[in-house]
Image (tube, rainbow, N blue to C red; front, side, top):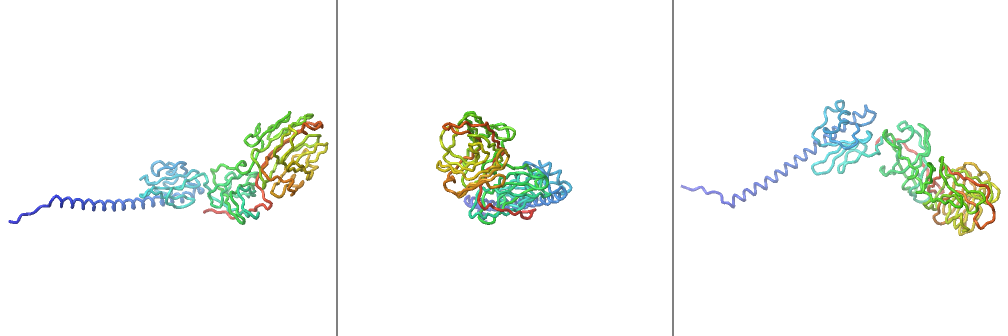
Length: 452
């Protein structure tokens, strides 16, 4: 009789190893299939929710349910549930695979983590994406308009302030508080300031454009965001801005010089530079802490009281001025009143200690006027209420290095014999300083966009 031979130990081990390897391949394959199937389901869920949200937005003024923090659909999104169930979708998916967020109701993001650890998401304003989820931030706007800025100055400009006349659109808030601006990339936020507006009519807006190449450039103006809070801010828009509100000088912006009875105070929305009578070397002035350079324009609304003797009102660029000493002014370009009893406003330039009288303004006394000082590398000029006082292209007058902007009053220096009279107050309402080129950029507003 023939005997049956069994497997040896080695044979059994080899068979077990082969079975183990094959099982591993099968498990990996099954896991991959399950993962892929789950990914398909997650994507389908996002698409189903997207369609439901779009349908409900049509009857809800274009708005979506607000969930200010990311929530899990079907578990902890109560506003989403009441907002779209049952009118736009029967029930919400309850597997916890999709999250939802809408900070303001004007945009939203649905997202899910796929089996390969990447994020698949849909944002109403930008569409589908794979990778990191697109965050829904405060810039959730339903309308935007391109604005073409043409730079014909002959060179590139950076951080240049542009004045725009914005006409009201029915999609805007009546006070223009929902405006926002970006560079051409649609994401770099630009600083702006609403100078003035007429409700539901128009607004004057200054925008600081980060970069302007020679020729045509595009920025975008955004609006129709019901929950937007205005970002209008003159301090971030201009080189220097002050409207002298409050009860004290903003010492983060100004150095204050008060000598021999002279003072500079703030009250009632005005800065008040005071110099006493009969005191030589008295001064009440402010000088900007930041230096202003060529290629700048100062605009200041001020009242200069010019009648008197041996007492001055000063408005302009200075360097090294000390009204209490006999030291000369090393560099300056100022509008100042004379030391005699006249009431003219002298436009005076000095470089390397030599003063030159450029022009006078006999109508500038004791009246609130908007003065402008323009400083380019080749020209200094001054204006009062838009009318030129004078200008100079002389190298002996134009400063070549950074200067402080100064406003205030002083009396004649102590080495002189004249007796200053009378006491004086010079008032400033506001001042703003910005960049300037002789051929300023122009702007054209384009057509409204509803998608981008």
